[in-house]
Length: 221
Image (cartoon, rainbow, N blue to C red; front, side, top):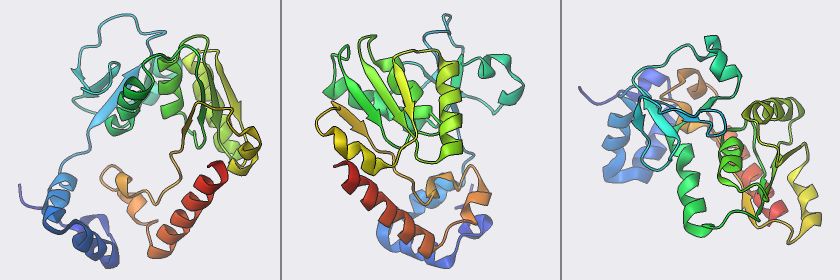
């Protein structure tokens, strides 16, 4: 297979040139990776999925698996019942962080600050002991509703969903043992899976996202 042509995604020339300069000798690897089909992965719910899952495991997540192809998840009752969550395998790496820094997880108070739609929150709450608490926050109201629905389907009860601006958590200094900030970004990681996402990219949007990320981090620091 030849190298991927970034014009296939209708990427702005400024984006490709910036990446070429930033990645240097690694730029051809980026091209080659984007020429491959996006992998499909999911994470099963240990609270509900009690049998072996017949698929290749994600090496850094005990409940993560790769699928050979993408099925129609919306037609699967188990999906709607919270038996599994469709999630990028790279996002499941949070499990290795918890295992390394928090081997004992029975009395932790955790904040997932930018949590919608709920992939990382459903993962975190599965890693926590019953005496721990997860506060799962989303500032945008309709996304907070989706977050709440996904956590309700997941079935763990030691989680609270909030709809607050990050600055409001400054009143809780020292309250949380762990704070996860997966801040809103320009979405470049979605290009391979969703070519439509490339149309929303622009230098101006990237700068806007960077400023938003800095504000969120400063608010919660």
